[in-house]
Image 1 (tube, rainbow, N blue to C red):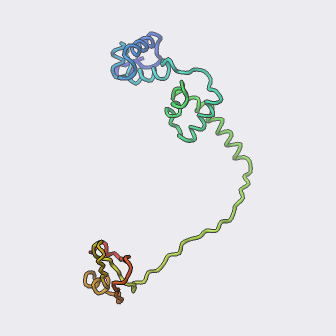
Image 2 (image 1 turned 30 degrees about the vertical axis):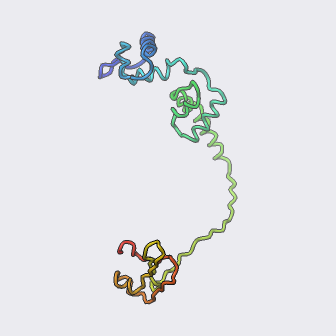
Image 3 (image 1 turned 90 degrees about the horizontal axis):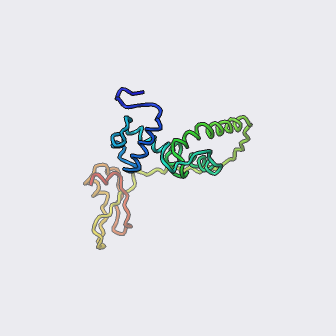
Amino acid sequence: MEGSSGVKKGAWSKEEDDLLRACVQQYGEGKWHLVPQRAGLNRCRKSCRLRWLNYLKPDIKRGEFTEEEVDLMIRLHKLLGNRWSLIAGRLPGRTANDVKNYWNTHIQKKLSSQNEDISVRPKEIVMESHVVIKPQPQRISTKMPFLMYSGDRSGDRQCITNQACLATTPECNNVNDTCTLGEPDWVLLKDLNNKI
């Protein structure tokens, strides 16, 4: 059967498989855009690549999944979700396609039936009381003085008083206190960062 683009679709013949094997053996894996032409196949590059990776590659492991493989697959699926190629990378010889198909036909049904059994049973949930400590907001008075440290790191300290603040920003007009040079090296700022 041929598609609208002129490439063959559908089942692969033994002759096509042999041509693909010979091509990969001669040129190696990769450069799949060149494979159909080199192998003399009337197939698209994606079809050639998937045929090789899922069916013809020599190190593909066939047969039933072992109990260890299934257990690892379940644990990896919990961790990675439906990222089949990553899961298959941890199962030597298994393809992403085989892992996905096994999951969908065997494990998913088994897990969903176990979940139904669990949901049928009455759930006994014991609620424990917990003490919740919520931080309380603090009010900051607008009558509080603005203190700004100004000066260099050499030790020369200068404390800008509220009057100096009044001169630079009108928002300070409701503050009446002043500071002295003996104040600590901290600063109370109220939107002065952007204004000075």
